[in-house]
Length: 316
Image 1 (cartoon, rainbow, N blue to C red):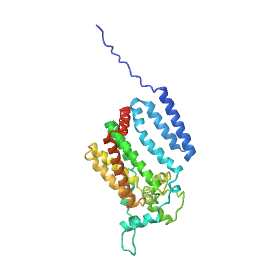
Image 2 (cartoon, one colour):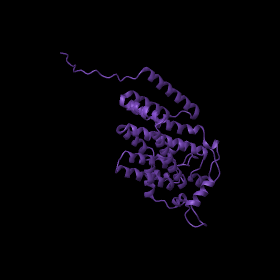
Image 3 (cartoon, rainbow, N blue to C red):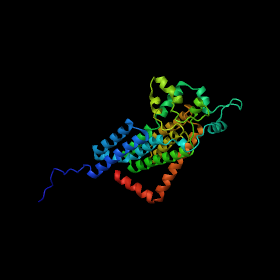
Image 4 (cartoon, rainbow, N blue to C red):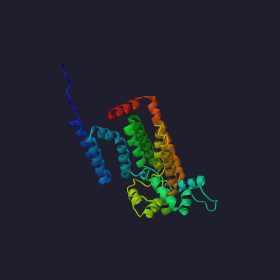
């Protein structure tokens, strides 16, 4: 009678040589292209090191790394926008957007009429300064944290969320090039004159840094790709995607937290003079359009749907 061995054969978890060669080639090509387009930055090495370490660490982290390449594509595209400023291709909208904001949402009489940004710049409060800074810090960590949660809970919803996030960004990037727009703080500092290569500015978020005696937002905005990319507000688009997929995955009371963060970011964008209300509204529209397009493509079950399903199977 044949007996079963008590020692189980271990699965081979080694990475194929072909995959190693591809990862090495893509990493080197990315670093070289980045150096040519925007110059060397330690962030680039960090991105490569993070991906490769996760890929080789274990089968689970390998799938995690592959899944999060969707967000890496977003980051690389955003970073490369520095090499091709949108004001090269279309006129930057400064005064017309400012006047439109004042016409639709101006506060006060016709004689002394302020945009909501100008009103809050004159009536800011320490509590609102702190809350706005906290909410604005959520615009990347919350979507990333939610994506990580979905990865371990539901790979299908993780993929759908990640691809929707990327699609919304692509729509936003197209809008940036079609309609370059200055943020409210630009008008407050420079008026209606166009000044190329204007560095990023913390605007009202400087009060958050000053309150805590730190340089958090100063460092963040020093790395911005282009200050003339205010319309639409993708800061306002991201939390709506999180709320949508939070509802789809039935997170119940957690969605109240997501919704609070969403509204908080919308308010903070205007309060800190980083966006007009019009920017926020078009950010919401961009998010709704991206969600609708992706859901439509998945419902049709065509080539895009089949490609997405193959990706899901690869990370399951």
